[in-house]
Image 1 (tube, rainbow, N blue to C red):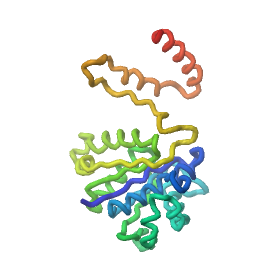
Image 2 (cartoon, one colour; image 1 turned 30 degrees about the horizontal axis):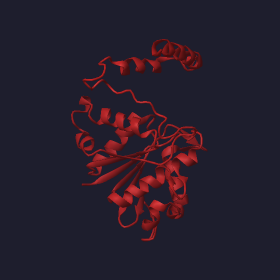
Image 3 (cartoon, rainbow, N blue to C red; image 1 turned 90 degrees about the vertical axis):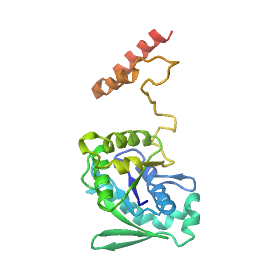
Length: 238
């Protein structure tokens, strides 16, 4: 088993970006320290930082995340979950002609994505990078309440028939690990998931397909739509 870690990039204009990406010691690990925890635990050989969908001070988010790790690597031991690993010598970074390499009890090649513009493109770019390096098992790392969507898109992409099984080994070896942090103003229970009907003792009405249509509502109409939706639900829930 050769493991690769995909650290999903949070948009650099997201509220409280530093909390999403790094977190708050000693207990709340963001995406970056969570990825390092998995690097230590799983002896990962590749760490992929995505994406290029946003930038700050001219630096794309994939690069910005890696730069944040490089600047704060000595602070990893402030997280309780990383103290034992930090005690073994911590994390070191070496820059080679082919890119950065992380060193701990083992080493991992760093791949920085500055081109992908959305989660699907990020997953495809990571998949290509992993396959080119012999990775068979991929670990997705994202914020707690973003993880479900990342997994859903990964399953769609890596099992898509148009790729003729190219990513099937990654689909079969897919793992996820959520960071402890959520988007600003959200909690672990903020997401609402509409599953496809699957139980014989419940309605088989495809409500999930109806709910999907909400994404077609124009952004400027969302407040009014929300008010109408509240009244409509009240009409049928009574």
